[in-house]
Length: 156
Image (cartoon, rainbow, N blue to C red; front, side, top):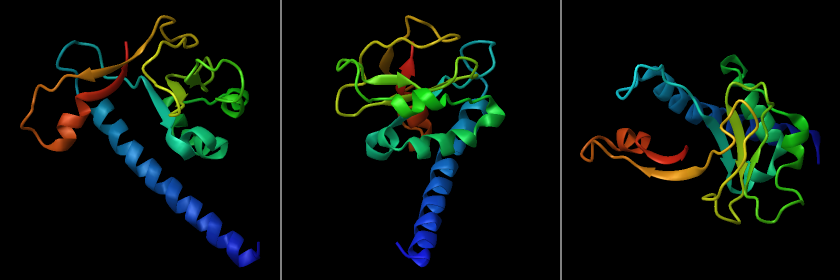
C-alpha cells in the first residue's frame, strides 16, 4: 500500500470512528441527561454493546470507541477484547470486554447466534443478569427517537 493509500485509509477510519462517537454520544447524553420518571435514582448507563460484522470483529475499533468514554469510567480489558468471540464455548454469544473496575459493562454480542440468552457479567454487575427485549412504549405517537429510547435490549 502506498503512503497516499495509507493516509486515505487512516482518514476514512477516523471519519468512521467520528461518526460512531457522534451517534453513541448523542444517546449517552439522552440517557444520562433525562431524569428518571419511575424512581428517585439518577439515570445511569448499563453498558455499551458492540455487534455486527465490524463491531464483533474489530478489536481496534472497540478499543478506540471505548477510549472516548473514559470520562464516564469506561475501562476496556485488552485481553478480554482480543479474545472476545474466539474459540471456547459455542453456546456463548455475549462477551464482557470491560475491566472489572469499569463503571459500566462493555460487551460484544455475536450476531451469528441469538443475543437473547443468559450471560454472566463480572462484578459489579448482576451475576444473574439477562439480556431481554423490552417493549415499553408509553408514547406511541411520540417522535421516533423518543419511542426508540423506550424499546431495545436491556440488562435485567
